[in-house]
Structure formats: C-alpha cells, structure tokens
Length: 585
Image (cartoon, rainbow, N blue to C red; front, side, top):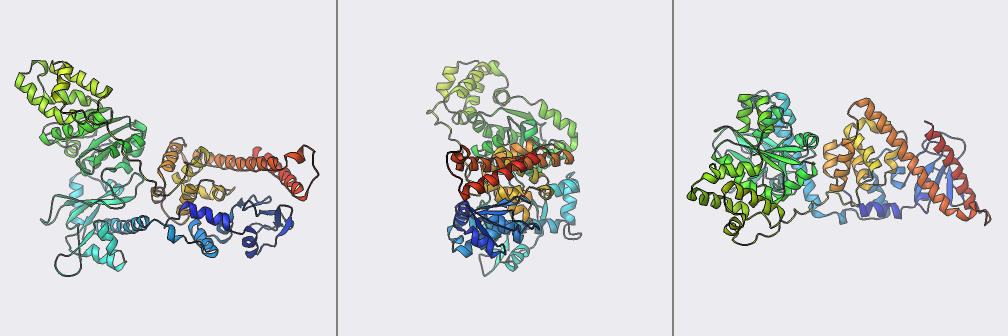
C-alpha cells in the first residue's frame, strides 16, 4: 500500500537520528554540531561516520554512505523503503493507515484481483488441452505465439464459476466483483464468472499494467460478441486506448498514431509492422484520449477503419472531436468490405503501410464522402450532405479552426462560407473544455529534476544497473516519487507496475529522459555510471554550499573558531578531497 509523502516527511522530521543510530550498535561521541563513530557499513579503526541530528542526516567519509534515517535503516537492515517507513512510523506512533485515501485502498484491492485474473486467463490459454480451441482461433487470425504473449491474450473457458472460485480462495472475490470479473447470482447464493467461453484481451495502461479486459465470444451463445469490463477504480474507457503499452515507443518515434476501432484490428496492425497502432475501448473519441496521445508526443492521427458503411459512419462520428481538438488527422480508406485485420492478412504488411502513408486529410476525406460530386452536385445532394455535417459542426468551437473548416467546405460545396455557417449554426457551440488533469496515483510535488530522472530512467530500462550504483545514489534521491519507484523495484516489482503508481509529472520526466538514453547495453551502463557520479558531485556541492553559509564569518577571519566551526571546516576539507578524487575518475 502506498504511503502519503506527508507521512514519509513526518517520519523523517520526528525521528531521533542519534538514538536510532546508537540503537543499531554505533557508539557516537559528540564533536561540535555532529556526532562521530565507527561506520557500521565498512570496517575502520578511526571514526569517519558522522551524524548531524539537526539536519537528520548521516555521512561516512570513508565509504561515502549517506542519507536520512530511512536510508540508514534500509542500508543497515536490508529492508525495503516502504517496510522501513512503516517500522519507523510504528516506533514513532505515527498513524500511516489513517491518512491513506480509502479510494486508494480499494484501487489496490481491485488491482490485486485484476492481476490474478490476467495470470489465470493466460495460464488457461496455454494449457495444452483447455486452451487448444482458443489457440487455434488466434492462429487462424494469423497471430504468432510471440505476438499472443506480447499482448497477454488469454482464455476464459465455458465454465460458470472457475475464476470466481479461485478469487474466493484468495480472499479477492468482492474485489473481483468491483473489477467486473464476477457477479452475484440473481437466484441463490454464490457468484458466477462474467467472462465465459471467450478469448480474453487484456486492456493495459500505457505503462503495461493490466487494468481491464475485453472478451471475444468463441464458445456458447451467452451474451454479445464482445464483452468489456465495466469501469472501475483502475479503468476509465474515456482515458485509455487499447495497445498503447505496445505502441507508445513507436508513436513517440514516428510522432504519429494509427487509430483502429477493434482490439484485433490493432493487434493485426502490429503483426503487419504498423507498431504505432492503437484502438478505442468505446465508440467515442474523448478529450482524455487526445490528451493521452499528446503525452505520447503524437503530432498526427491516422484513422484506419472498416471499409464499409460502419467505417464511414465512424469517421463522421469521430470527426467533430478531432476538429474541435485541433488534431492533425488523416483517414486511411480501406477497400469495401475490408477491416484492418483482414486487409493486413490478405494484402500483407507493405500494402497496409502504403495505405497509411498515402492517407488523405480528414477534411478532404470527409468532404469527398459527404459530397462526392463537389460543386457539380445537385441542390438536394448538397442539402443532404449539410444535414450529415451538422452534428460535426456543432462540436467545433468558434475560432480559427472553425473558420478554416468552413472555408474548405465552402470551396468544395461551391457555397459561401458565411451562408454555410448560418445554415449549420443552431446555436453557438461552447468552447471545448480540456479533459481534467489526471490525478497522480502517488501524491507528489514537482516532477524530478533531469539528473535524477535520467538515473531512474536508466534503471527502469535495465534494473540490473542498481547494482552498479557504487555511490548509493538511491539512498539520497531528493524526489520522493522516485524513492517509491526504487522501493517497488527493490521489492521485486516489475518496472511497469512501479511506473503505473507514479504521478503524471514523474512519468513525463522519465519518458523524456528515457528517450535520451543510449540504446545499447554498454553505452547505457556508461551513461548510468556518469549520472551516478554527477549526482554524487552535486550532493557534495550542496553540502559544501551549506558549510560555506554556516562558516561565512569564520572563513572571513572575523570570529573565533568554535568546535562546530572546526568540525565543519574539517568536513569541508574531506569533501573537497573526495570531490577531487571523483572528478579525476
């Protein structure tokens, strides 16, 4: 469970550093403003381990270990960050649980049930007997085993209580109900599975955490062809695009996203090499979706929809939101009767990529489909086209975008823009409201600075680099959100799970830093070691600046040396020597 940053800060401020260190076997003696003793982290005969009680920090000039009370216990006892905070809080009488948002507790419980279900469905798919029919179906769609595993596809057998029984055994049944995985029986006691006889498509957050499921009916006749999880604490369909976790890197690289309507359409695009493809989890395109694409640095969106009336209607349904959002959008037109998945399998990857590359603009496509004959069209055809365009125009606010849209429409229709505006404006549309800013999953302040973000991004890319952190930068990170991330990784969590819990500002900073890191393993390690050194040097400079401020009069020769001043000046000399050694490496 997450611990609010305010509680972590309270632990730091209230802990008695001297008592804490001495309780763990270090004999400390007062030396001015600090206390000195033999370092517990390395063997030494003369004391180089210092504790500053007022600043709540420690530092060893022999092995360069340093940090706060939490870092001390973590390093000495080998505990995780969260366990250390909990234990110290308990000793200090600080109630951590009381300040935890109940919604966050429920969210964690729903996540536990969802995680278990994702594992369960995948295991059933790869069961040699139970999952054979589902595997055959997926292979018939041209999907390879590697792609099936990459997207985490699964199988829910045609059984009424298989998952519900498993959730009950693990104490997760009530949370499974909140996640939309099971429901109480209308008659009698007990619960039944919502997904039965279905190929399971996990819906993941951009970081790769499973937050919901889609199910394609394969056996039985119970329910619609596609069934989706209900919205819950993890899942809001207005903010999520399917396959973003697989497509995010290519979207950033190409500055473009391809939008499909169906889950298997997006998967088929990835199979065909269009790896920046995503899909809607609902029928509407929302400001939340556009915000997500903006965070992924997509400068354009290509609609790739079915080549039938439904596909054409979908373009008209989505066009208003796209124009209103100022999105640079193109439309890839599929042949009649084709959908992206079948077209990719039939024509191959090159044909799909060519289709996307040659896609016309949304306005050009829309005008051409609404009124193919353009200025030569009959009066009745123009009036019918205007009726179809009316709901699109109603979503576009007054301003430059609306004026340009009506200008292009006037040219295609052969009618004055002012007359079109008057005819289509039942009332002035309200300005488009921006989607609400997502609430950070971990309460946090400002985003991490670039240096700490680079350090963390390298570890998320290759967690083995934690072992290369010879300066123990992890113990001295200033940003609490990154401390949470490190704690999650050190406790065995995956990078995707750890990042899922981070705040939006942290995610953006880490994404930008990751994109600047070298791709090959050797260069990545060199870059990481360099960042570690720079962070250590920065910490030394910060301490030197503090000492300079505290001893300003002493260094100017205008006051007598006190014991505190002598200790600080001694520390200054040791820090300068350490800085020289590091700079020469």
